[in-house]
Image 1 (cartoon, rainbow, N blue to C red):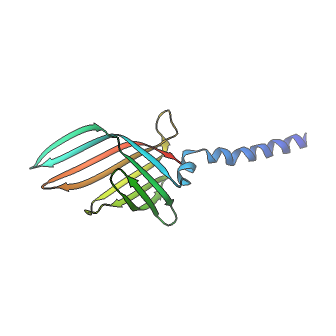
Image 2 (image 1 turned 120 degrees about the vertical axis):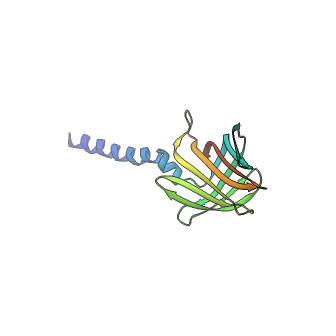
Image 3 (image 1 turned 90 degrees about the vertical axis):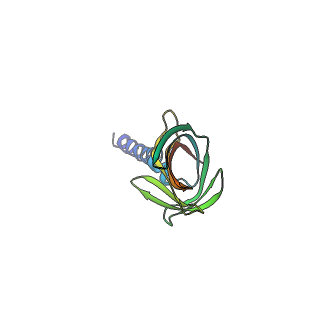
Length: 147
C-alpha cells in the first residue's frame, strides 16, 4: 500500500509542472516569438473639431521576435517596417511599446487568454497620431500565435 501511495505521489508531481506549462500565462511569459494577425479595427478621427468614428476589418500582421522580458527588449516586423520595441511584463500581460519615426507611440498588449476556439493569445494595439491638422486614434484587435 505504501508503495502505491509513493507511485501516485510521483505521478502527481510529474503532472503538476506539465499542467502549469500549458497555462496561457506560462506560454505567454516564455514566448520568444509571437506572430500576430489583426482582424478588426476601430478609428476615431478629429478634423476641424468634428469627430468621425468607424469600424473596419483589419488584415495587418506583426511579428514580435527576440522577446526578452528580463532586458525589456524585442523586435517587431509589420506591414510597413521593422523596429526595436520596449517590452514590459505585468500581471501576466506583455506590453510592446514602439516609437514611430514621426514620434508617435504604438502600444501593443498581448493578454494571457485565448481567442475563442483557438490557442492564439488575444492582442489589442492602440495608436494615436496627428494627420495634418487632424487627430487619429485607432485600436486594432486579433490574435497571436507563439512560434
